[in-house]
Length: 100
Image: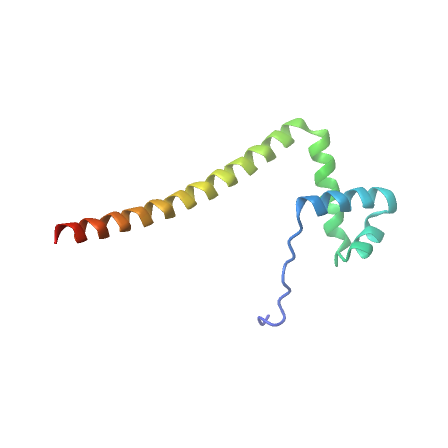
């Protein structure tokens, strides 16, 4: 598959997903997907099933919350590593300048 043929994967906000799920409850997944411009109604169906599982299974909900927290902490740690690297470089630069 060439680069031109690949489809760009859309990303939807949690707010959009929540509103889409509510609409799907009212008019059905297929109609809601069409109305919202979601190309694949199975996507909306998956969101709906995930939402139900979160609502019904407290253990699953806790695991998902822990996954989200872990992801956030990893991102934060990576940002901190970048800041530390910049500070190390700046420290080395100013130490050299001071010694001359």
